[in-house]
Image (tube, rainbow, N blue to C red; front, side):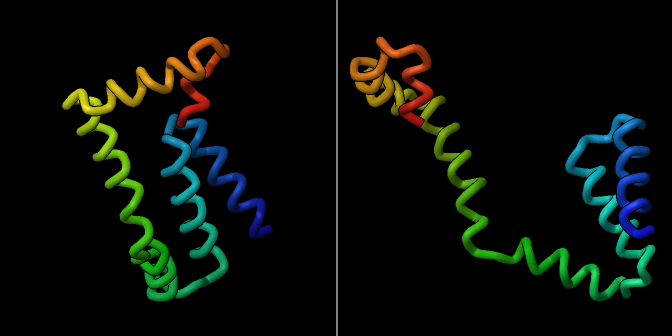
Length: 96
């Protein structure tokens, strides 16, 4: 029955046009409330996953890419990589 509540909630939220990430999160919260998990335990579990130092690398990596793209600093390394793998179909995606 617990899995049914999760899948039903997820299906309804996706059918309403909610983005997948939010639908999965809300269906997980609905499932936790369905099995009578205390709200305090739920919030501690949610915030403990976000409170990791290594997760800071993700937004800073995106920021570094945006700065390099706007400043033009990435143009020369990409051109160099194109010389080596440009003849391969999808070669520049291999550089990443």
